[in-house]
Length: 156
Image 1: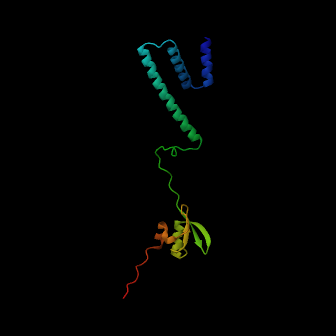
Image 2: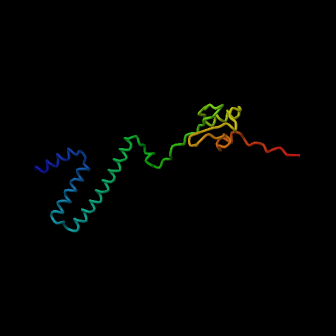
Image 3: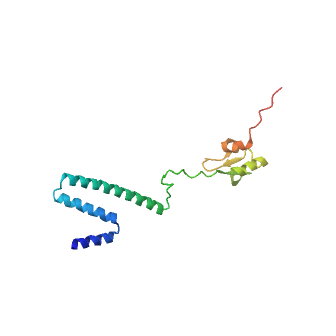
């Protein structure tokens, strides 16, 4: 009777039936080993139960790890749940005009500036990832804003 009360108290402290069942199984393995084992059928059944318990424990650990990730603000997307990565942010460019830095400007605004003549192929630009300032005509993403220059006129 005292052992049953101890077990019930342990279960109440633990508060998790899976954990209690695992504890019971571990105790039964210890008792079986102390008594010299059992029958082959009993041993096989014990092994099967052990594998089942190991699977349950692995599933529980995975669920706990995922829950911890969610609590820490990690979404399932970031954990590789088959979701595509977020869309890349549109590049913005800084301009050097009369020795003064201007911007950043998105491509749409630079396109308008090129049409108005405020941005020329020789205007120096910079964006994240560039090691230094470059002429706009040398940046593939911006070179298309200026169109293709006409070929040189024929000589006569």
